[in-house]
Length: 398
Image (cartoon, rainbow, N blue to C red; front, side):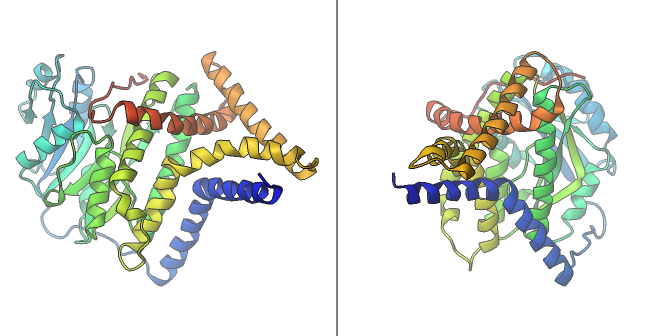
């Protein structure tokens, strides 16, 4: 490899990594503030009587959280009789269904066959007759005003879906899993808010996501990221996915790093699968959904495909440039900085295994951990092709 090409490739890879994790956020920040000056965002309010809405909870063996989730559902501030609660519990073989019989206001949809969450949603949605559906998970807690806040966003006919905010419950003595995941979701939530202000949120988290019922399209049963595919299909039709940080779902972090690793690999594999199924959005077309394409590629595609690969290519490229064809002080310093960053990540890895909390090491550790799992996702997707079910992630309690 010629020195010039090596040097060019190194800086090209550096630019991709910088753009993916920082540059896109900076560009979004500038574009949103420019747009706000010339086109102030309208205040969305629902006019007239509030609509009937269904809270749909897809659950598999969730007996441990039924009482807490139903207490949360009953505490939601929405007119009596206009909020329907539906659980779809296909395949559950614990006491989930038995516990739900204690709640007469709940409609339970159940089949003994377990075919995965996507298949459950495909079956459940056609059985719902309210004009709006809110999807949520059994192990998440919604804020009291969540449904009211989501409905306000549907005050615009252009809104096809509403993504609520996902928050991770982080305690003072949490491990690197909770600390890193909590920081990641704070940053991710800010990007989603700016995406929404610029044009549309790119994808939604299944912990809290609402749609107009008529916009639902059945998805292939082996879909791993049903929330992402569903929201992107709606956005493709010209609707916007609004982001509502006033409606949030609170979730405990993964129980440990092994559970978080399983979850991250599955999400990354779902991202790779989504890229294949939405490949037509990779073709530049400024005249049709140009902004959505720009946001999708910048916010999602790069993270789930190119960037993790080039991130780790920077190590051998930097080492090569530092000593070949002659010693370079600049590239040697850059190599030392890379070494320092990965050393911090490795120490963070050791500390989390020993349950020693050093929050300053959570971020580099979680960043490297997250990108390594994207590489593992390539193999996961190949070995789990055609499967729509997965092993549940254990969560931290309390």
